[in-house]
Length: 494
Image (cartoon, rainbow, N blue to C red; front, side, top):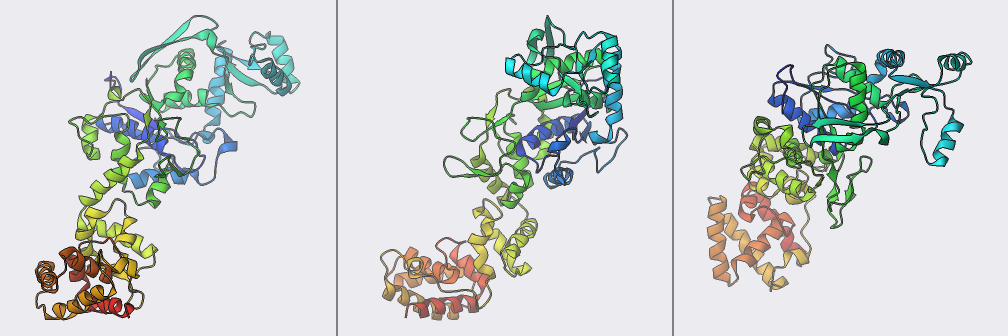
């Protein structure tokens, strides 16, 4: 059971505007987006802001910006508009109120006048709402309303029997009606609850498939009964597995910001944290698609267009999955390695600039090819290659613990550095291959191992233990700058 031939595929993502976009929500949206794109359908963004107390100013912009960064295009939404707007629930209150009262008129719902004190007493008794206003006679209801008594509208859930529905991921699921309460559909302030609002919107926006977290599965029978009471054709449902913490224990919290896993790994959970950490959007999407769905062919790296060709909701694993953040680090490195040089240079430049470096575009394009196989995130460029862009008076000789190689002291280190200067000056061809051959000969001549000579040079010209290949680095720095840095190291040994 996949797309319905009777109608085009229309899938919505309906977050609450409660702050930055969480990666768990994006994963749910991604699965719906992939399904819609595979079947040539539409993907709709709808903002469910009926809980006004939880709404955070600026959240809608943050949600839309997250989709823009990821490259997941939205067909209809608050920014895009569309034929079924408005796409913000607080702007559709009259519609919900109309249908809530329609259900009352049809005997499918009722006005509940329970006061806060009454509800508190019921909670203390441990029974929850006891349906005491379910069969209130019309005259009493009218009197209470005329006296200004506040009320909510509750749905009349069947008291006995079972409710069954088909889930595209889990198959047929059945629930005992007696386990469910008469849920509030419309609050006393005129705002709907999620249970009514999303159904009214899904019907009027012609939503064909509802994709949402498995946490909503207990409410599935209630929603099925509301659809039936309204007399509307139900969409297809897919309750998606949720993301668990990296250790597989407990749900990845929606409210939690970046945190440290048990092994000390930094775990981003909000979209802006992935941006700040230097991850590529294509890698993040590939990573999320792999959690709970399998591309097949034992492939872990694939493009979004390739995923669209294969994705189906019925293939999603119903089990909740641990959040394998270490895999993202590896995957991001794969995308960096395969990136076009000019494109990657464009991504790395602002990272370097934000760290205070003056970036020469031509030099950066030369650096990228020797650097990209070593990067796991864009931010790694600072530690790995910042020395390429140091100002003349900013580069300092490294401390001796970096400069001294294994089994070498100050005398031996200075000997290598001093012998290197005339050798560099003598090279008409300063290409890295010619340098390698010349310094290999030098090492043999002065009685040191290649690693000792090459490591001393690396430390002198980069100030680091780890860097891109030594001779490619010196080729990019050029003769004059390489010699200058070697002399600084020599002077530091005095």
